Every structure is written in structure tokens, then in C-alpha cells.
Image (cartoon, rainbow, N blue to C red; front, top):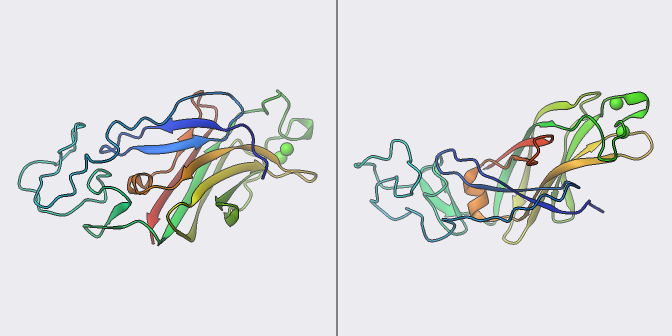
Length: 214
Ligand SMILES: [Ca+2]
Ligand SMILES: [Ca+2]
């Protein structure tokens, strides 16, 4: 697929120190490289270590917490692993459930024209790509700038896979690309966060996506 210029985007969702790397497929040249201050090696995945070893105030991380990871704490496992049932498990290969919840899109195209002829609102749907394989497509939400889908898709991820969620405006002639989240090579760190949402820095586009082991 011929995509627009890549516009890296870092969405920081500081929910219990969850860091999510998301990339937007925008045409605006926002920059912002992923800078994870505590990417590797800072995990408290050891045994018996009280949660809250991170520097961001993990709630409930008092002493006396039993050994084991927490699915709510993206720092409680490390490397290419994620917390499943209180245990750090290998992230790959593994089957995942990706949920596409909603998207909000700009009121017009980048060139200032309306999404549809006669000024109509777009007809939005999302595509989920693993590498170059289409693994999911939502239904089309017609004539809206704020789509809600609440659809989930199951697929396997292996190490090195590239993941993208793309939003388009369905048209009779040719679909208009809108934007999306491009995650690049999927990592354990990305998956530990569970939240794959992304947004443009201008706030005129956002996409709410989650992923969890299935
Ligand atoms: Ca259109
Ligand atoms: Ca329309």
C-alpha cells in the first residue's frame, strides 16, 4: 500500500507507567522519536521485588506485594515478554486480540476539501495490517467524523512482525486514506502496555486501539 509520509508519533499513556509507542500515518510532518527513558533493563520482573520500583509512582506498589507480574504494570516484565496470568510469558509467537474502538478524524482532507462530494462527512473504516497481510477490517461507519466500531480481531504475531492500523474513508471511486497508527516492529514493550491508541499532536485525529493476548 502506498502510504503517506510516515510521521512518527509517540503517545505516552502514563497509566501506571504504561508507555505506548504509536506512530501516525499523517501527512503533517510532526516529528518525535520514541524516547523511552526506561525501555529495557528497568523491569521489576524479578522475584519478590515489590512493585513500584519504577520512577512513576505505581499505585498500590507498597511493600509486601507478592512476587509475580501485573498485567496493569507494563514495567513488570521485560524484553520480549508480557504479563499473562501473573507470569511473564514470551510475547512471540502468540495469538492476540486487537480491538479497534473508535476514531476521530479531521473535518476535511489535508488539501482543505471535503471528504465526500457536496461536503459530506466521511465513511470510516479501519484496516489492520501485519506486515503486508490484511488481518482485519472493521465495518464502515457512515457519514461521521467520529466513528465507533468496537470490533476485535484475532491474529498471531511472531517476532519481527510489523503492525499497522489504518483508517480510510470509503468512497465509490477510490477510498481516501485518512490516517492511522503505525507501530513498526512489534515489541514486548509495546504489547505489555495493551494500549495501542495514537493521535496526532494537533489532536485532529485519534484512534483508540487495544491489544491483549488471546
Ligand atoms: Ca471521500
Ligand atoms: Ca459520506
